Length: 304
Image 1 (cartoon, rainbow, N blue to C red):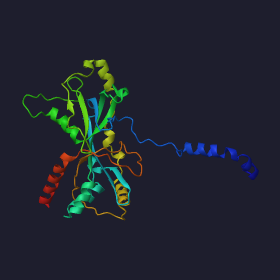
Image 2: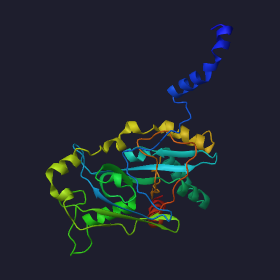
Image 3: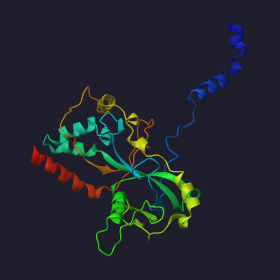
Image 4: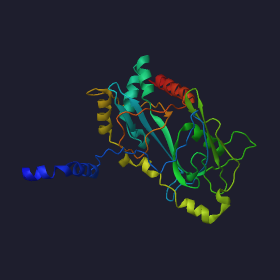
């Protein structure tokens, strides 16, 4: 382009540059990291929320109606966040787990505190149909993925394995003899609490109408991607990321059994997508899990 042409066409430069930037994702539009397959409860200003869900059976070709995985989410001394899925979810060594083993076995209280802060967090993923969502009625009747932690899974196990003789076992994932789950969320001492959540009496979904049930079944999302190794970073990649977050050239590692500090907490939607540089974690109710953690490490200490 000649100088005269440059001068003549300069009025169009801004529009052309903006168009080019937008075509490669460089526009000013804020990128969304939400996975629209997931349903999330809505809470009011006081932190309270309510919805009715129906847990759904395993998708075609899959054995279980749920999958379980772990991740880590913590901020390093550099101010950077480490938010990654743990390789222990697929039975492989994980650099954070190995580092936590070293820290915990050092015998120093300050090291144990660091290990607790970096402990892995437990998540379950299932398919649900939203029966009632007062805050978002448009969700009702739709099938979503739903991610939750140990508290809710314990309630599922409680109805499948009741403790008292006058209670009949219920498979909450069954179309015909399952039960609606009344999700009741409260804010207790700054943490999200699910203790009042409960199952209703057993009843057939859609009154057992096969046509409607088959429609629901055909809308189930596959769960296997959450355990697919291709959706996890390699050990080397995670180790490099961890060193960068900690601001270290390397980090103390061990080939010994990785320490398991399990905590239920919200995490980024899976499969992993690019995350903002800084991301605050939502407070969660982990009060019942600290005793389990201490018991686990007490056993480790006795074995060493």
